[in-house]
Image (cartoon, rainbow, N blue to C red):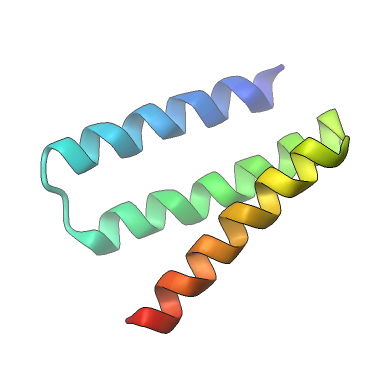
Length: 68
């Protein structure tokens, strides 16, 4: 349960940073931290849905790095 709360808090922080026009590097750092938290959640909660969510986030971050 702690992992899911950390993820929700991180998502809120990312949304706030985005609304305030934070630099992309700051948001990207938060997204990387979100990935770590999501991996922990995936290990704890298990299941295919959790794994797919983490894989999707990892792919999105990889695409962002390629596009830069």
